[in-house]
Structures are given as C-alpha cells and as structure tokens.
Length: 105
Image (cartoon, rainbow, N blue to C red):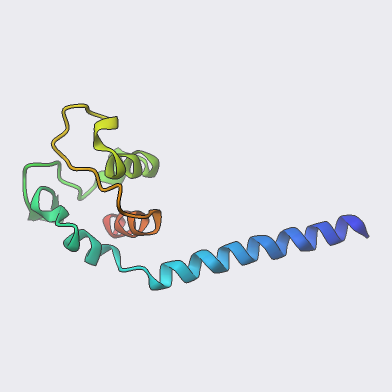
C-alpha cells in the first residue's frame, strides 16, 4: 500500500510539473515573434529570408542538437571565442525553446 501511495504521489508531482510547464508555454511569446523581436534575421537566414553574416538556420536542427543551440544562444563564445554573435543570456529557457520550436517548423 505504501508503494502505491508513493507512485500516486510521484505521478501527481510529474503531472503538476508538466501542467506548470504547459502553462508557461501558453503565455510565452511565439518563437517566430521572438526571432523577429531579437532581430535574429538581421544576421541569420531562415527559409530564404534574412541576413548572411551568420549561418543559415533553415536546417540547423539537422546539424546541431538542442543543447548545443541553447548554449549557442546563451553564450556563443562557448563554442567559438571569436564569435561575433552577441549573448542572448537575458532570454529565459522558455523563450529559447520557443525559438528552437520555430526553427523546427
């Protein structure tokens, strides 16, 4: 019986965390809006539009993993000390994942 209670409590906690995360995503700006607000298109092309100073991000998720992209957005110099890309460390993870979701589209 105690084992069952622990499983129910664990399930409740996981459900709560997922519900909370879903709620945060519902109120977060969309990835496309963030991509434009942060002016990513100034340097990066995506689906044929944008700048050429940075790499084309159209198929970036075929070349790089999500963790790599998060680190690149938050601290570009962690991958390349000479990177000209500014840090977007002011963005929260919810916003960064929204941008990544947009790049998957």
